[in-house]
Image (cartoon, rainbow, N blue to C red; front, side, top):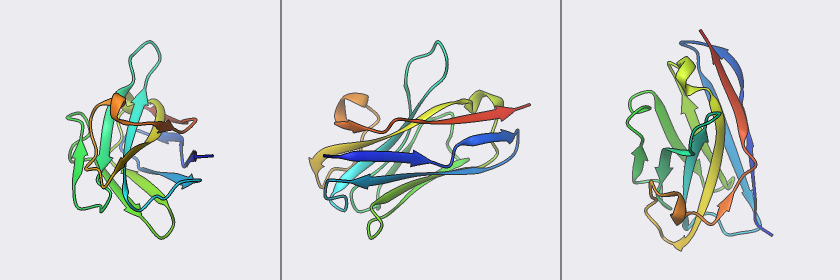
Length: 126
């Protein structure tokens, strides 16, 4: 059974930082791409970032470029999202996602991901 468990969310002031983690179990992690998405109340789930199976290729949504950094530790089966210079508009539930495509490069499309975590709340106060 594949499980993705996010952690690291919380309440932070604008300009602050948080680091989200997503631990994967039940599936080989090191040859699969991962992604982060977010969903604010009343809005569709939005692409945030993705990372290829090797970590060599990364993608970012326009709204987070230059502020967020995705990384992975294959030895720990964990993907991270370092979020700096946070803004109130970053407030959302953040989800990690795993693609079952072997040696995948990652994608901005939700349809490319087969497994999702339960989400972690990030709230940025002004």
